[in-house]
Picture 1 (cartoon, rainbow, N blue to C red):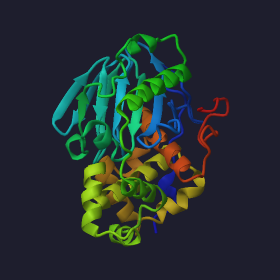
Picture 2 (picture 1 turned 30 degrees about the vertical axis):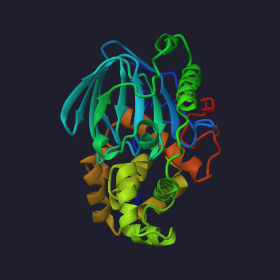
Picture 3 (picture 1 turned 90 degrees about the vertical axis):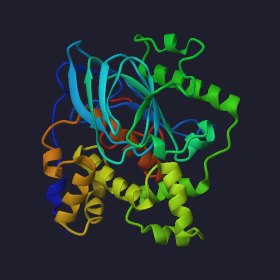
Picture 4 (picture 1 turned 120 degrees about the horizontal axis):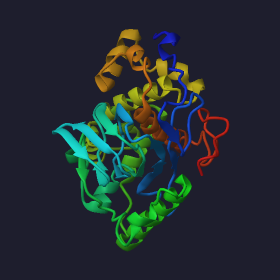
Length: 327
């Protein structure tokens, strides 16, 4: 069994040259304002996310992302360099479509870190844009498929507005798109598999298939299409993301032993973590992970809400005592 000490988290203060306007952890790391979408958008939209993080002009970030779902993100300034599967890509102040990841994606940024994001449920891109996920794994593409910046939308995301005002406007733009399109909801099987990845990522794909009365082949085909990866890889990634969130101090501490028991032993834990993050857990926790903390906190909050262990808008265990609820 892995040792408890493997999950000691990094304790840091608020990073210099940065003011987090959308929240922060108890250790001072910046957070986004992220919340579940309204009920009428919920079948397609997993999360509304605003990271309003002001920095000095010369601020530089060297971190990364590891998404389990696809996002459309609006980059509000900054100079971004991302190491995708196709090589380095550079982006400025623009909308981009960000795919899910098979492993940690290195990201560098100069200037502001502020972004807005719409997270899509598995299978939603197929219903909304006729697109399956495999072609977007480990990639970022320029584009605004939801039309979030049309009809004067860009001018409304002013720097003077609060993070909550940005989130409200973002959700309005998403609703406008959904109401015009009237799409069908994603396949229930994909939603059930995502829930399983939150609740019990140690479940065998064959066991899940049997429980839902389908063949393993059907499960593999559906998950590859809607998640971009094989079922077993999706579950392994879920375990690694939960572990990374624990190391960063953005998880429910009562789950620490459960996360450890998902691995056969310490060497298995280290090997699996390295497969997704390129370093050992010990090396991972040695330095702050600014962007990754924002990235993984969004998933950690969504996971607890999906499992009905945290009510939408309820204060999260890792949030700073002075932070207002993300609602």
